[in-house]
Amino acid sequence: MNLPLLGAYALAVFLLISTPGPVVALVTGTAARSGLRQAFCTLLGTNLASLVLIALAVMMLTGVLSINAWCLPGLGLIGCGYIGYQALGDIRAAGRPYASQNKAAGSGLAGGFMMGVSNPKDILFFVSFFPQFVAITENFTASITLLSIVWIFFDFTILSGYILAVGYWGGNYPERHQRLARLSAWVLLFISCAGIGYNLKEAFNLLSASG
Image 1 (cartoon, rainbow, N blue to C red):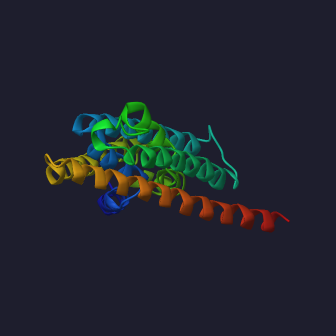
Image 2 (image 1 turned 45 degrees about the horizontal axis):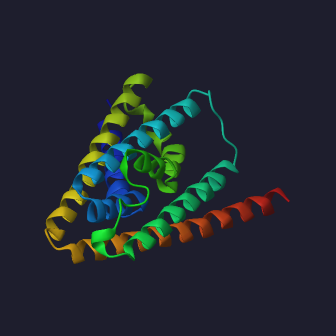
């Protein structure tokens, strides 16, 4: 086993997941608005999405699936559009009195899955960086299994930490939960707008290069 390569992968996964992004904003906002149980259901959905992205990466590595240069900005735009849609729903929900708020938009198992599978940050990681680490063992299947376990471990552990921190900080103070839910929604909207701008720029660059 290539331990230095495994260590580099573990560090990359840790930094990627712990850095605030769409999934972190979703689970923290869900924990603030809908409680820990709903947040953990959302977390399970994001875990399932990660397994789907890993499966797609494996299909690329084995030649079953191939993508062209336009796929990344295209997928990025779709993902950012979905994130923006969910953010607007959360912002509208955050504007209502706390006692009358429904479940966070896009939360729960299905919502977490959709956010995870459309997360541009994760898509880029699994398409561009994940293949670089498959040489941690001499057996392809063993490598993919180990890489998947490491990802799920960090994903579940770090996001669980965020959820529990929200529950501890908010306690029985509804106004704290409401402020955090509103902040998480605006963070999602900012990420969506920034991602749309970036992917449009990449698409224009590809268009200029092909012209």
